[in-house]
Length: 416
Image (cartoon, rainbow, N blue to C red):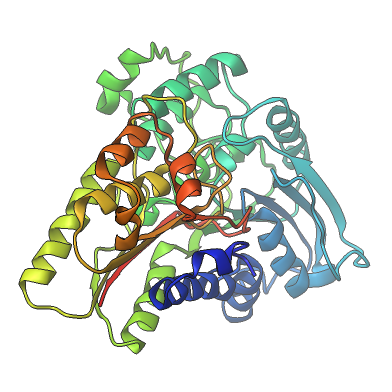
């Protein structure tokens, strides 16, 4: 099972149901299975006899596996950039493809990312064959060759994240500081066809933002986040040529948070729930989303809806004030608990299996938790950004390990 502590968490029928459909959606939309099926129906390389594959991000291993199984010997070379400790390409080691596994760092680029990115740059600088580029979230840290020293780069990015800067603001700064983001990776490529297939982990599914868009030309604009960058003392190096590639470029987002929500909505409706879908592009502060969910929940109760579900997906921001363990999904679960009264069960999870600086993927809570843990105690843990410690005590932290999926976050609330 993907959820390692499933039995411990499934203490009620409602909990078991939410955990089951979460488990099933992660399997149904596994990047390996999904990309294989996508290529069967929409092969962008069907006229190409031989080409190379570069796969980056948290889903890079599974995306590459699906592509290798589909194309087999047509792939001349496959480069996989991952932060996974152990990589196992089952059933394809016997292929003639030249397979290179590179390591990247996450959540901040380090020496692994710099060394691996330089090897990718060296490869594409001498490559004339077409390239199939497989992109998933997490590549912002794994694929990086900055224009400033790495310690300064990481100081700036961490400062911006700790001050609640959203993904667009972060990418504005990343583009300014990088030699490979916002399409600039292609400036090194000597061939004439580059095809990117992208799994989205960002609200709105904007390909410029996913892994900071290494194949998506985008001119940054720091004026839009001037207040945030002044707090973090950001200085942009002198401008360089942003995008100079002149070959054929295809960028396609093939899998996103919306696919997951549609699946969950279908399963909830089949069980008889009226589904209130808040959408897949949620991008707001964590406490605001919790309050919004609470308002909709109260509206549904007042409207005499007896059996309903509230679902949504995206990525919230959290202002880090304390030094505890936790993440945005676990904080959301605790904040939603504070908002609600009545019979509810709520689940929030990061589809990559890692939530913040904890070992948890997210959390599942219900109204019975409030019988043992009071609102003041919950608030104390939230103030220290220590949601995992409390949820572990509650027996409510969801543990999956790295899933190989990465389409941002999902949440579901059900009321019977």
